Length: 105
Image 1 (cartoon, one colour):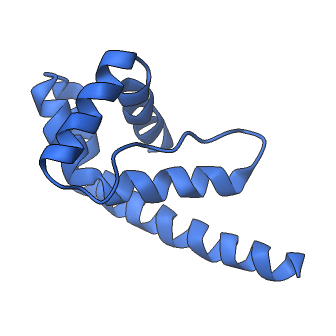
Image 2 (cartoon, rainbow, N blue to C red; image 1 turned 180 degrees about the vertical axis):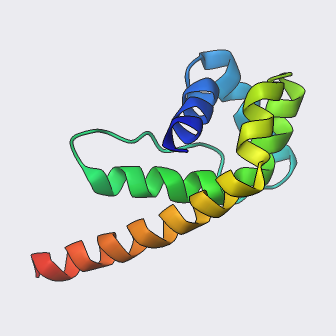
């Protein structure tokens, strides 16, 4: 599951052309966000932020993967199992990030 999310983000962010095309698509559909956040292995909260942004941009991602003819990623990303897992991960990481902030105080 996590591999699909990371593959999608790497595909969109992996090249300058894909990044620009995705940004233009997001502007055209008047999306709230225009880019993904990369996760780092150093800080686990950044991974939660990446999953959250991916969830918020899921419709744009589906359109972009379809336009780029990436049927394999499109089908894996749009599957019900992946969508449910992604929503669950977003909720878990939001709770963990909130707990982390409380513990830092």
